[in-house]
Amino acid sequence: QVQVVESGGGLVQAGGSLRLSCTVSGLTFADRAMGWFRQAPGKEREGVSCISWGGGFTYSADSVKGRFTISRDNGKNTLYLQMSSLKPEDTAMYYCAADVGKIRPTFSSCSGSWVWGQGTQVTVAS
Image 1 (cartoon, rainbow, N blue to C red):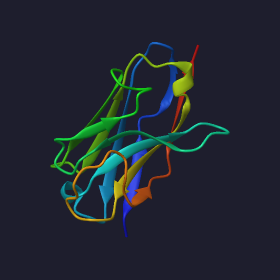
Image 2: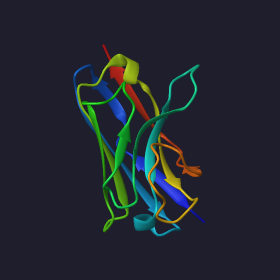
Image 3: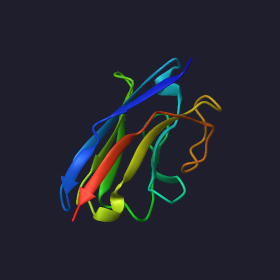
Image 4: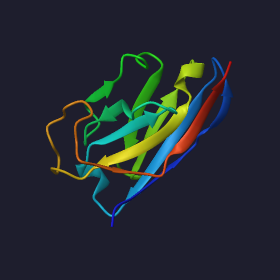
């Protein structure tokens, strides 16, 4: 059974930083693309940033480019999202997701067969 667990959310002032972490069990982490998604109240879930299985390719939504950085440590089965220059519009529930489709797939932004974590709340105060 695949389990995805996020941590690191919280309340931060606009302009501040947070780092989200995500651990995965039940699959070979190093073989899987990973991603961060978010959902604000009344809005659809959107792909924030995704990373290839080896970490060599990444995708970030235009709204977070230059502010958020996705990375992974395959030795620790851990995914990260470093968020800087946070804005009130970044307020959302953030979800980590593991692609349980093809093993070592060709990277294609945030496309995948995703298994989600429970989410971690990020609130940015103005």
